[in-house]
Length: 100
Image (cartoon, rainbow, N blue to C red; front, side, top):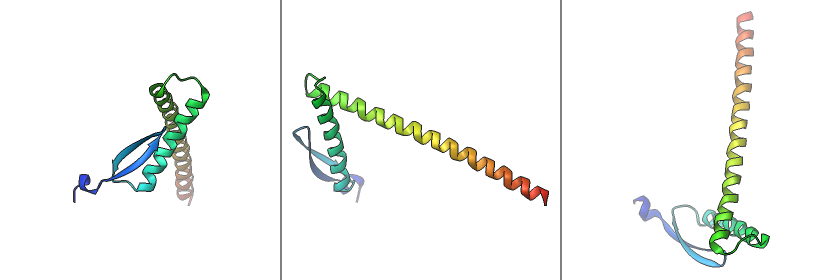
């Protein structure tokens, strides 16, 4: 079975409009993603700064992208911290081994 054949159609509602999403992901996952996007669009709409659905979508996309970038930066910092700690431990182990 090809990847295309494994895909199923999942109906989701975002910002009051129904969409049919083709995905090989679990239905629950796709629905969670749609709910998240919907909630971000509703947040923008409630803020009153938008003039229409396209602007709401763009501002919500900007907010979601900002969250992604922040998460990546945090992940990169965590990875660097782990690498530094691991190098320090390796140096201590090597020092202890050479002392024996």
